[in-house]
Length: 134
Image (cartoon, rainbow, N blue to C red):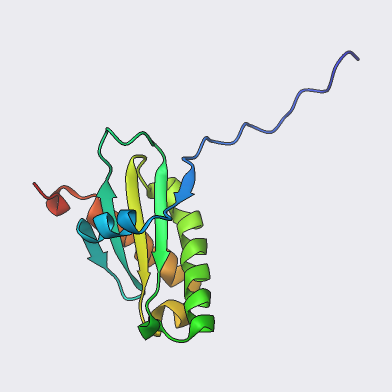
């Protein structure tokens, strides 16, 4: 037999790349854009200007001291990162920035599947034609 055997598994679907927001200015711009509250967190979303040279999905995470001490805030952000990795490649739109803001008590204690559902419904609301701002 010449060469490797043919691979029987299909090629994985190409998913958009998630990039983390790091600059404060990006968070401030997203804070002025569309937002959708859920029981677990607040979602802020904005479509980037075409002049910005990044077509992927960018996401940021933040939790204020109202969420709790440093350990609690870090746990909340870890959970938000996990939810974003699970949902945004499927439902996020390339060319958009998303910021997930943790809520006191709810982000840490809510079941993970409820967090996933919350992000799915928040994304649907943000991207609905009703939610469009002029």
